[in-house]
Length: 91
Image (cartoon, rainbow, N blue to C red; front, side):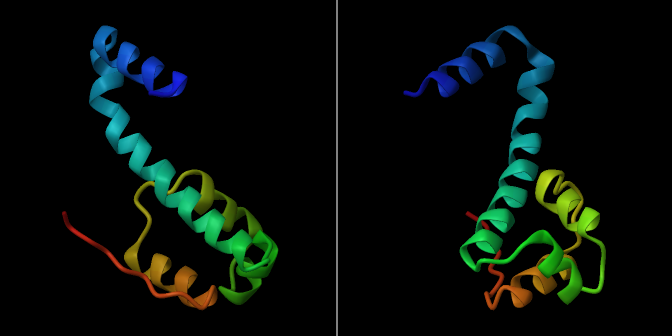
C-alpha cells in the first residue's frame, strides 16, 4: 500500500466529511486527468484542443482540472478531437 493510500485511509477514519466527499472528488479528478493524459499522448496543447473545439484555453484547463458536472456531449467532442472513442462503463 502506498503512502498516499495510507494517508487517505487514515483521513477517512478520522474525518467523516472527508470520507463522504472523497469518492466524488476523486472521480472528478480522475476524469480530468484521463483527458489530460490523452491530450498529452496526442502531442496537443490545451490551446490546440481549445481551437478545435471553438472555445478558450481556460475552458480546457477547467475541464482537465475540475471535471465536475462535465456534459457528456463535451466529453464526446473532446474524445473525437483526440481521435478517440468515448466509452462509459457501468460496473
